[in-house]
Length: 342
Ligand SMILES: Nc1ncnc2c1ncn2[C@@H]1O[C@H](COP(=O)(O)OP(=O)(O)O)[C@@H](O)[C@H]1O
Ligand SMILES: [Mg+2]
Image (cartoon, rainbow, N blue to C red; front, top):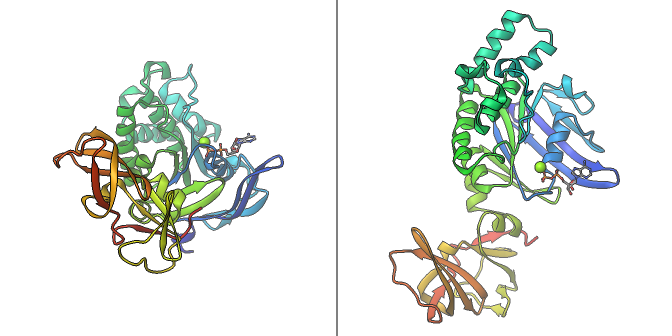
């Protein structure tokens, strides 16, 4: 069997009652990959995870894991682990017993349980906390207990649904690194859900961008960041200047604009990050509406023949005053070609 087909979702349609929230979803995941499902709230990320975990039966489609059709397999027979943002630890049990819980349910003998739990606690770096109760741990430590509890079950796939959302900004960054280390050292196939593009970019081998129950794009973080294929993905990853193309002209709020160089191919749109806008030179003129300090850079909002343009420059460059006129260019060469304007 090819590693390319370790977990495959084929033509999945997922619904609650009459309401189909995921339609025609196709996704293949390789063994050992760390995949991020990225998309805005309500786009169907958790629903997709629930179907992989067996908590929601697909209306249409098939789920295969490690060569076996598990579409109708009960959750406890799937060898799929699920960690939620709420850790759902047993408050009256010690860390050790929380992690041991699933193994004891499987009637594993005491010595084997102890060995597995100790290994699990070492993996998440909590070996010294085995006797504590969850209330005696920080949020990050509780999340690591939840992670260990899933890892000791040795799942074929570990699903993490917004695992870092309940943590404060600093702990989130720490847990990112921690999860990456655990993934690297364990080779565990993982799918994690996030609505935070920075988190997805930093951690994932591949990112699946979802919108309204459909996959918009699948790619490495570099591909998603540098070469979004649709308006939705471009917008989601920070291209703030996005225009449709019609008859070789750029469609703008103020009518069609003829580009300085012809646009090649059959682009349906072009997109520029604020940093790709060149200021102080070029065929177009805009007026500075706002100017704001952003650390290493300064951000400008321009009124222009394109409507509003968001530009960004190194903070060391001379500052353009609000109200002043500035020439600029949206270089066709650096503009990212969009296949779809949806
Ligand atoms: N138990 C449920 N019953 C009915 N509708 C639901 C249920 N859970 C989620 N939904 C709806 O399904 C859509 C997708 O939800 P969800 O998968 O939780 O999104 P995400 O995790 O991407 O934020 C939303 O419109 C949501 O309101
Ligand atoms: Mg969700």
